[in-house]
Image 1 (tube, helix red, strand yellow):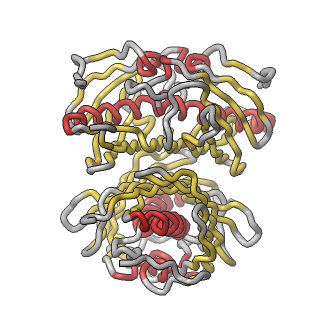
Image 2 (spheres, rainbow over the protein chains, first blue to last red):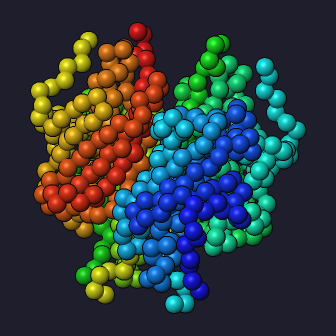
Image 3 (cartoon, each protein chain N blue to C red):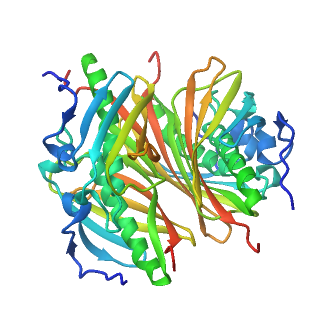
Length: 138
Length: 138
Length: 138
Length: 138
């Protein structure tokens, strides 16, 4: 079993990330950057991007950023908690997300994810806590 | 402008709720019940239902439950914060969600959402804070 | 080393729990009940009980409820995250708190804490995530 | 009625901030800096600074930073939610806190609070949501 980082930028083509349209742009040990194009299928009834889209992006960037770095040590990453605050709606253009690692502990990693609109305004912030566990049976 | 509650059960057929497949089963003033069928398109790379799906369900149930009850007073509901804790993965079957209203204030409603698997085990909990605001221009 | 449950009700007489005045009333495997008498020293400048008092009570009840039950297995409890929502202020009387265990995993316990005033109104809710770890050196 | 900013640095001498020992060092429109000296009375049973102390500091800095800036417009600040993640314990020295404003909306302000130890290591992060409301009767 091997965990291979896809060539970046990478547009998810299956699973939930594929469904809502996550594109991963950059990944370092402490930051992951991604984006999602706004389309009607991502909106809630009032015409704003659905809050769950932001939570999903944050979850994916933080989990991915953790997974790739702990996998080499025979460990896996699993989302533990996601706290998202909605400050300004996005209705059009692109959702831009930047996940920054705050803490890389033995059993828990913590990330802050900032989500901005095309004008660079801070619209949503998420704090993601990711559990790091041994791979069962290894 | 009128906000009409669809006949229940109601399967969202557009927007993000339609994309991930939310079905609303029951709605009272203090509870909203919904579900989502698990399919591969809702999963993260390890084969579990993506955390963002749970956050999305919670967001929709709580926002809907708030919106229908404040709209009569000329007010709208907007998600303010979503705190989701992941306790047990779901990989198959149906995601069952029950939103219960904890607080109905003048400017903020708070809901707890419990998500269970087909065996009734508690898998995810979300605390949703929904802002209630006057409709601009009314 | 032994962890002995004090006789209940127990009024903390040292440390931070002693400073703000936590009294533990009941403790079972899945619930812990406590209270704090309101006094001026617990208030913020506007005369309401300070939000940090509620967060402290929640933290203590959930950590205590976890610690006593995992210690027998050679494990310790450490607060990982605390999400507190303030819904209604308390200005007088007693702060009544009930912590209920939602999840008892191998590495994480999750508790919901409800805080009520003397009239039984729900004023504050906290979701506490407690990490469970092996005792170093055992 | 007038809200006067005390001369800084300011050591709270009454209320809960006085009880646990909050000192306010600096305050601008977008940042508030404070600190608390560690002493046994601030610890939980295992000898670490109690998680509630961090939540209290965050609550106070964010509420204060909001209150002083909205009061001129005849509005008051009230804590709405506090999400605190504990990453590294502090057992000695000084707790250093920096609150930074992420969002200043009409009805909600959002702050991130970072808490560090004497070595400058990030130990605790809090996201505080503060409601801004009209002063009743004005």
